[in-house]
Image (cartoon, rainbow, N blue to C red; front, side):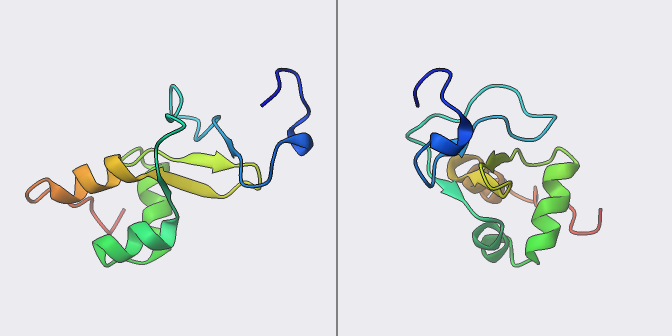
Length: 91
């Protein structure tokens, strides 16, 4: 990114690091980001449930330039690997 460059001039696939309102900081550029469908497949829930978890603050999301949510793979896998720590599917 060039400082001061308009958002439309960023390369396609670039991720905006503004994220959800509750998110602070930036996602490291080396982090692999997952789609809601990929996260949902790991937890065996509907992708809309993953979006609800992000809105509830149970999982942090960043937004792409197109406004789509993406999730840090390390955070998702850490959440999945906690014994009995699956976020409630019924928020």
